[in-house]
Length: 280
Length: 280
Image (cartoon, rainbow over all chains, first blue to last red; front, side, top):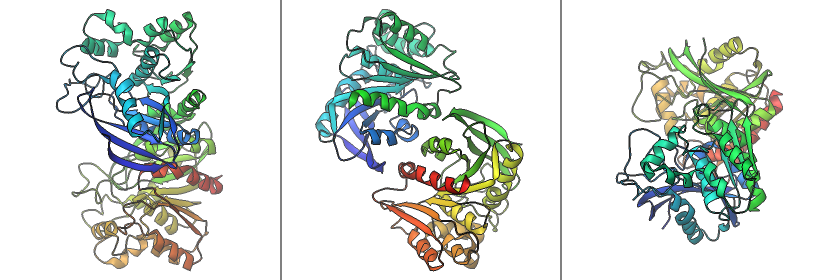
């Protein structure tokens, strides 16, 4: 059951916030859907970064105009399970707002933190049932930002053919690498300290063994992004691994741009056009 | 002295948040400026609505792309003086975040609540001094939303020639009318109960006696705006007054749109193009 929490007309279409009780997350969760008009549209998921909710991309990315023009529906989920019963920790890079789009295997997180199964299975199943007249779930693509860029790349690479295309803004490309503090913390917490299990959630590792359609992946990265010299992102490692296995990846280093939505909004139309090539 | 609090590259230009100690407001205040590139640009002020700060339009309106293309600088001030020393009241429609772009005459508000003089005099003076290489203050226009739409229309009509053009999204057109609860509360609080003094801050009254260049005013209003049936906005009164005195006003009733930034973003490029006709 999808409960409509709010909606607004925008760019000739409609943006709706839904609330559901998720079986995977064992909690209530919200997501937003932008539907361009009265037709039936392919679906592009946007996965947000640390601390975000389903709201940030909807209000700050400036993506709805081009999505409307191209006839692409956008689905924007939350970044983790939330609520009183969902375990959390101090800080902004683990727990609520920081689900990392994986299924946790370690207690006490494994009950609720199942963002991977929620995004790849439960949510599309729900959408195809409840919005079957508006969304064509046989045509899906995925993109995201930072932690959500990691989500987009890994979900794409782990499920050949599920998504037509993938792209990312400043993605966390190599979270299992010891220099990536975000990845160390999240994977230790959600998966445990045996780092051999981490590689199946790391885009730079996954691409090495990927066997599926090699659809070009587009990545934009700001050169003035503070997290770049901290080695949280490591696009160079992903690019190198892709090159070695002959996977076409276009990493665009955008001079002077940072990690913010001011950066995302500048290049989001390029990403929508990239996905339109494969969705339409 | 303008202190740079933060900045980001966006759409080839730069958005900067500045902090100043305002002489008019007797308090610190922030504003944001978007500068499209390395040239010298005309200035378009955006006045925000109730509860907003200098952030909302910058992050949610999706205006920066078109401003960059047209070569128009945007200046986005806060909606009131703020800070511990600035008197405030319970609620969101008076006091902090609700300055109504007037100079208060009633204690205890008259010391700080001087948004009219701040926007029309102090801020442009400061910009022409500190950003003289980037902004051409001889070419200024103004627009706004809701309370800020009221601000844009009244500042334009009270200062013939100061602004080349004016436009508004869902403006409070007739705040001195007894049916407009926002106006009643604000004007009583800031100006006192003698309602004869209120008319000089009411666009529907001001247009009747306006003598200056009759540059077309563009107004967009959503038909599904909750505040419309509450008579907070009354665009029909402004349109009627304009018609009676032969002032060209285009009020576009946008079917199904509400009062939110989803509405603003849908039509903001039309407004930028409207102003570009007079600024360029």
